[in-house]
Image (cartoon, rainbow, N blue to C red):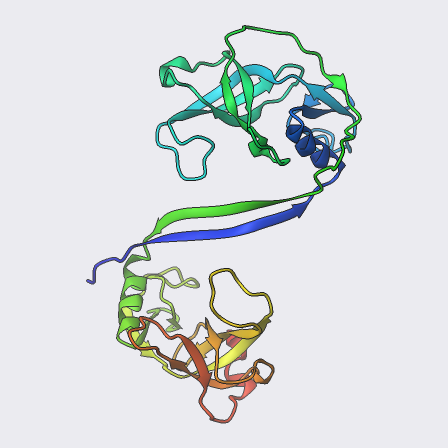
Amino acid sequence: MPDVLSAPLVVEFPFTRSLGPVQSAFLTGLRERSVLGVRTADGRVLVPPAEYDPVTAEEIRELVEVGTAGTVTAWAWNPQPRPCQPLDRAFAWVLVRLDGADTALLHALDAPGGAQSVRTGMRVRIRWALEREGAITDIACFEPDDDGPTTHEARPHSGEFADPVTGITAPARLDYTYFPGRAQSRYITALAGRKTIGERCPSCRKVYVPPRGACPTCGVATDEQVEVGPRGTVTTFCVVNIKAKNVDIEVPYVYVHIALDGADLALHGRIGGIPYDQVRMGMRVEPVWTEGGRHPDHYRPTGEPDADYDSYRELL
């Protein structure tokens, strides 16, 4: 059996969204060192604010201002902060019910005394970021409030600010180690030798590329390796008109699903060597390898006649 491969994998993209009146007021308020919530029809104050009552689903628009200190209702210690987390040293994740609110806000607590200094019921207050832009990070973190309990009633607020925040762009990032398993390790290793290996199901006899180690239809293990391709047929395609970050490919370009000869599952690849508006279903293609490449860089037309639709319609 080949060694099971592993590699670090990062999935990262910016998430952009517009804000309605409630979220706009909340984030703009943070910029101005003010925390706003909403009052429901039965008098509960929700912080962070919601646009609809989670119990009744009724629309909520009554904004109120709550305090900047509160009480820890639950916590978890984070001994090894990850990149881009609120603090670069050990801290606690805490749920804080701010004075005047009935729900809790999740954020970081700077606890110089370590995990033993954190407890449910302790009083904390907001430490504001020095530079604020209208985001949850305008709260740098919470810190212990040695002044003890205070009272703060939720006060009505108009939600009106100069230059309100109307949209945000938040980075989304997933950073982990990927283990493809034995079946895909064999597949990846074979690609480095310019071969494409699938696996045949012993029950339905379909050949799956890339292999998963089991047939998704029959649910039985697949251990018979089958070499497929290298040529194949374009089953479906899409034209990409938006340039991706860190991808050195000029737009527009075409991504396709390709049914390699001998395979019963289409895999995806990029088409090159032909204008994007000439790519079509049924077109016969072959892989193009770059020197030292461990997988095909792209696929190009072979010049063969297009495949008949009935030959690949089950692979759409």
